[in-house]
Figure (tube, rainbow, N blue to C red):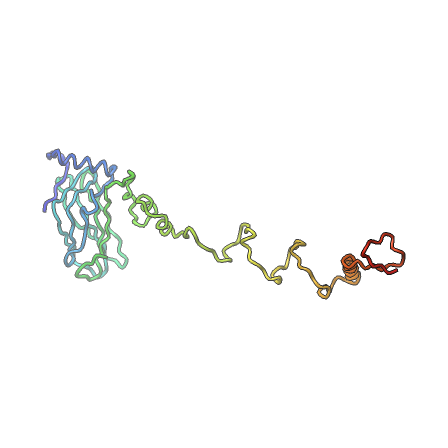
Length: 279
């Protein structure tokens, strides 16, 4: 396995290397990253050693090319966990590109160490963060967090890899996720959903959305006459004497009109055929 890179001052760059560099520059928009999804992918190996896949990378105006898988061995574990960083290191003075581990500081809650990114000295391209558990003798895949940026451009010409949070809504939109998936990332309700009655505290409900109510629930407001049912006289208990008398008189008048039986003190003025009069 060998890693080559450039262009470095005083070194020769082939036509193929220039083509590779310019192609990655065009795809990256000037941002650092690896050329394809499998390039420089970090995975577990044995013990505290990680394996790094072959590939092409672009960083700070330079290319780095590995023609085969390589390994990087981390320092022994400590009494507290730590986070080490696997990097592709461009040394502008030595004119070299190498794989390396940047060791973190052990702590009960460790943080990743800072990278060196000096475009005229040493420039480190981050590939992965590796959590080294306390007193561990080996690593598992869950200890490795991929930190690469892939230069590949989506079909719509927008780089979804610019969004490094793999669960972000921007990445989902750019990569054509379904509306249901996007709602899921937003923790939004489905297109068709229901609400508990207690959640409805504003707005106006259409009549058809209002359920039937028990009479005991109607404690205010005025009912339209058409909404009031017919009542027997026995149910009218608080109209007062004059109110009941008026209702009785109205009922009697209605009865007379329906039966055509009339009682009065004088001779009827305009009887009609079928009427029965008493006077």
